[in-house]
Length: 201
Image (cartoon, rainbow, N blue to C red; front, top):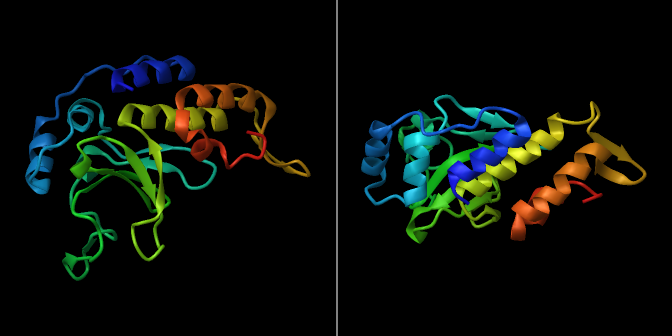
């Protein structure tokens, strides 16, 4: 999904003005290209140049918030993942081609630059290797849309949006009436990844 289209949809359900290309962060693009010493997918370049937040940005989730990194934090050396700042040396095991867009409770959300695509995978931190995780979106636009939709479901409806009773861990009726149908439409193959936290999905 195109980033601009995703932002238009987000603006509709959050009832805000749509974000257009209002900045031109060429310096960020040049820095990141130099750090990674390789080409960046077109959609990632567009995201960094025009749409990446100026400050770290959070989407609410069922657990830890999803943190989208600011432009200045989009970089090759990520402390605790591939770099130990205290010892000023690399941490072994991190794939060279991984680009971190953000994290959810230290679980990194990455794009594999070697694929030439912008498919996003959320990896499991503390699993002993970076081989474990789930693909969460086909591209950045879809990822932003799905993250915003979950945030909206958790904040835009009932005061008590999570019901934990004999029926299980469920999203409240108004929120679920909105969230699940849209996720079937927008998430496609990743519906289960975005909805399996709720027993009433």
